[in-house]
Image (cartoon, rainbow, N blue to C red; front, side, top):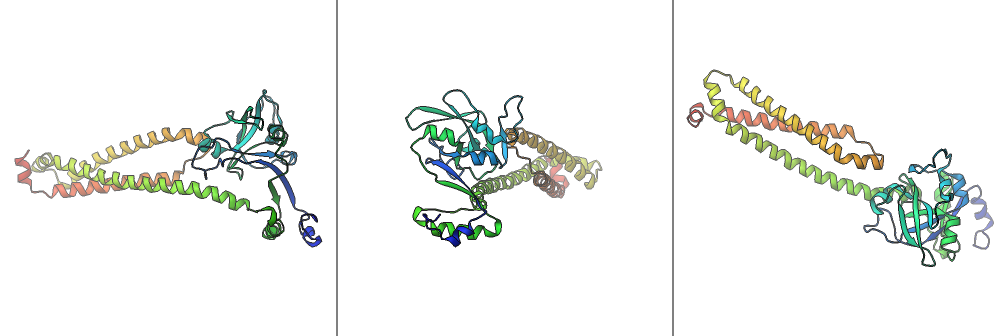
Length: 321
């Protein structure tokens, strides 16, 4: 620390804070911040300290048959077939950017130009490692022996001292280009892109819902107008307006309910592969509220169409029947 420019007072301020250094192979970002499919992803070498520490949430991992792992990070040190290295990746990055899943291989070249396969044995859930693929430090040194030193550091200061520690590190190590990013800020940058996509899809879906609702109202109105003669005949035979209104609205309501049920079932079937792969759950409250609004608007359109049609004079409608 003295060689790097930390004074005795600065060094005492860093006491009790754990630092875990990690080796880095520069490459392409594999997070949602990259709009293209990476060909050579960034690779982090995970040291023994992090493997023993464990932590972080896993979406899923390839647990060996008959073996219960208390720490999934130990999978990075398992022996696989020659030319295959166990690796971790974030679940969202693997699924949507790399287009691979658990047990699939990411093919790349080592420092000598030999082909090596990084086999995904674990997928992290919404982690701060969304930009990289992780392998053990021992595997990293075998594949990229000239990449000496460490480029990424994990620090775990107390929450009350996080800002102070970040300012101290950046000011003292600015000649080395040291940049501190909070884990919350880093994950928020990934989620911002995801939320933007979701907002876009929701906007387009809302527009489609508005257009569909208008189309539904037009179809119901036309259906009732085409039945003016039938409705006028029933009025001539003594049916009350309220009875005819209830009959037509009930028919339209039944058709609307069947249509919503079929559409909902088709949507659930279409989205089930993603929900299973991502481990997500449906937002039932908002989904049910949307379906209720669609049904309500359809019924209001039906009532308006029936009310307008039954006000038509009886004689002209009978003549056209």
